[in-house]
Image (cartoon, one colour):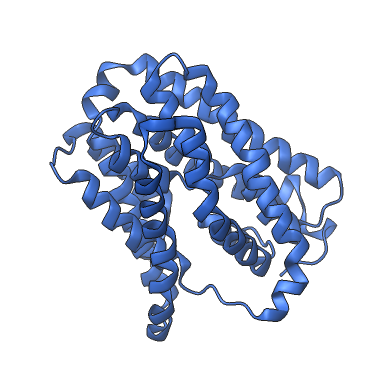
Length: 309
């Protein structure tokens, strides 16, 4: 049972991936293509179980709009503002733009489950954000990166990374995958994402520790300071925790794994360092989630909230 607990703990997988990547590295001419495959499978597994009815659209319509606002009109500008500190380095700035342009993480639903939030709201909000991102992400990258990224190629990858997993998870439902094997599978592919992202950039990371340090500091500001500030603000404003947890995650999380894959596929040849802000964000977000789960009951007691799912 202890082994199952470790295998279901994403922190163990991410930490292992970091250590192995920095020790051994990963050099492979098809690294970008491997990352594409890894993300599609991971996204498909993570989306498995998303179910809602037409009635849910009426119930959650206002909060779905709020999720769109928080993800793209709050989180995106804040990410770009912090990323602007790196504008002198074209590759790093492009990485921050890619991170700001992608939607929230699929783990919004996982967070709602573990932190006793409204899981159905998380699902509905996630669906709205991902449908919108089919247009928003290509448009944002075109406006901010210009000719650095072919907008048609970007659209192709967004459809591949978002629409395809949504389609694949439909027949996957028939398998009724047990929770534990599915969680382990998601964690395994998370391990591969972190390992490939860092392993392919191992020499840069070890050769430029000061730059990596600043990226970590910027990510801590974007994720930890923003995340806990919003958590405390919502708790003190009397927002029910059930409703507030999905909104908190929409404000804090980006799909860093998706941004890693896009950077490797579209920018990796000319701007290989562009992946670093996204890879660092992926690590810091995982740590933040672990800390948030440990303190949420003290900051935002369930006894003081209503509307739990």
